[in-house]
Image 1: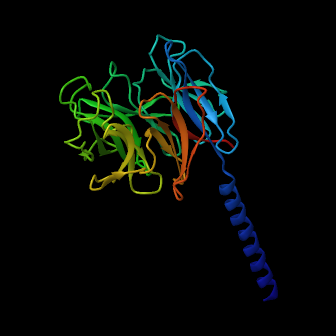
Image 2 (image 1 turned 180 degrees about the vertical axis):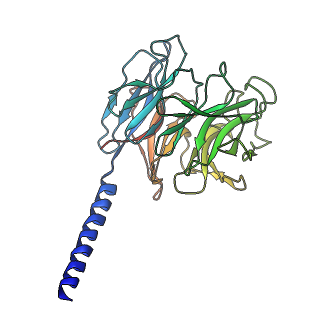
Image 3 (image 1 turned 135 degrees about the vertical axis):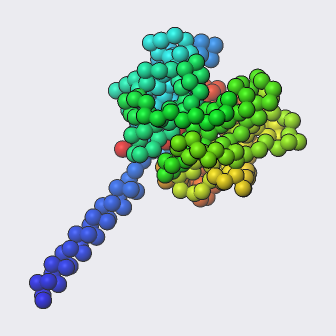
Amino acid sequence: MKSQITILFILVLLNSCVNLNDKKEVKSKKYVLAYNVAMNEEQTDYDVWTIDPETGKKTNITNNSDVAWSYNTYNDKIYFTSDRDTCKRCIYLYEMDKDGKNIRKVTDFQLSDSWISFRKSGSEIIVSPSRKIDSSFYIIDSNGKILQKISTGLKYSNDPCFSPDGKRIVFRGGKQKSKRVEGFDEALYVMDDDGKNLKRITNYPANDTTAPWYAYKAGPPRWHPTDNFISFPSFQNGQYKLYAVTPDGKKQWKLINEGDGSEAYHSWSPDGKFLAFETTDNKETQYDIAIMDWKTKKVEILTDSTYAYEQAPNFVLSN
């Protein structure tokens, strides 16, 4: 009996050690932010940078005279579109490590200017191909192989984002092919991952006439990792602000109430505890990267005025 108790104690102790190590591993996860900087706007030279929110250290990790724009990350990998080694504004998807090394071309077909999203532990990516190629979304594997094509039935669709379980997709859609066409009527839509059960979930305020034709009325959506809502930027009352909507479209609200500036491109930390976003004055002369503790709502501006356009932050696992 005594030996059984001893064995049981050892098993409990070992299990406790494993749990403690697991907790330690979770707590030790550290993220930096990848974001995009206009190095020379006239020459459309954009680089991807990283910044450590704790130390403020900034690093240019692409440093190339192309249009490099990070459209999402997964763990310690940064995915970005680029027109390097091809014609101007002919963009393809690339992958690189958090320090800019081991750059790898993912797609052999051109993409639209569009955010991307991941599911199945990063093994599948949803992208929007160039409109010259197709109007459907593509689900591809990590090597760029097309696994599935999804038609939305709309004349315009862009910026797809998987739900946390990967079974649904939210995206920007319009009834016309371009914002330049009357009746474009931009909104967010949700559908199953096979294109079925399409549902419109946002409506722009009918009495708001402040948005220029080119502005987002429903901008690129991001699905919160743990809470049941979708965040998106919208130009309302003369400025961009972040809003939220439930996946069924029944409830919509302003995400950030404080501050006089504008917010647009943004992302959530994988645990949903932090929100990173770009913020700018209403004249859009200076874009900076900010981070918010979602629980306390404390906001910290991470960048400075060295560059005028610092945009679209994404969380990258750094250890």
